[in-house]
Image (cartoon, rainbow, N blue to C red; front, top):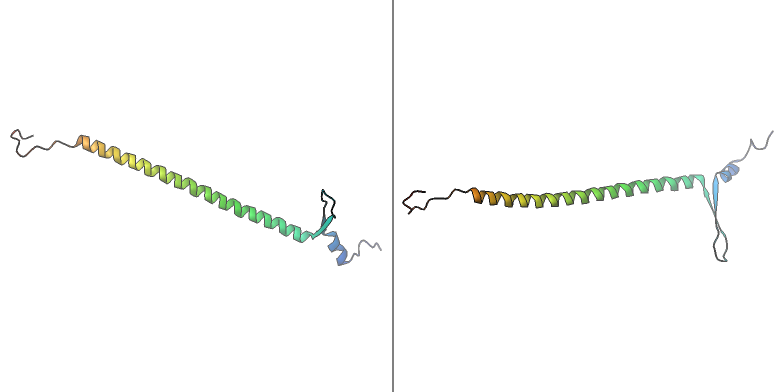
Length: 105
C-alpha cells in the first residue's frame, strides 16, 4: 500500500493552503501569511463583485451626467426657438387700422 493514497484530512487541508512571504526592504523580520484556498477564492469572488458594483455605479453616474447636459442644451435650444418665434410673429403681425383713420387701413 502506498501512503500517498491514504492521506489524512489534515494533510489535504495543508496542501490546499497558500503561503505568502512579506520580505521588507529594511532590516526587519519576514512576515509569513498562510491562507486557505477557500479564503483566497472568497477574496477573489468578493473583488469581482466589488469591481462589478463599482463599474455599474460609475456607468450610472456617467449616464446621469450626460442626460443632464442634454436636458440643459435642449432647454437652451427651446429658449432660442421661442425667441425666434416671437420675433417672427412680431414681423408678421398685421398693422391694425387706427379707428380715427379715415383711410380704413
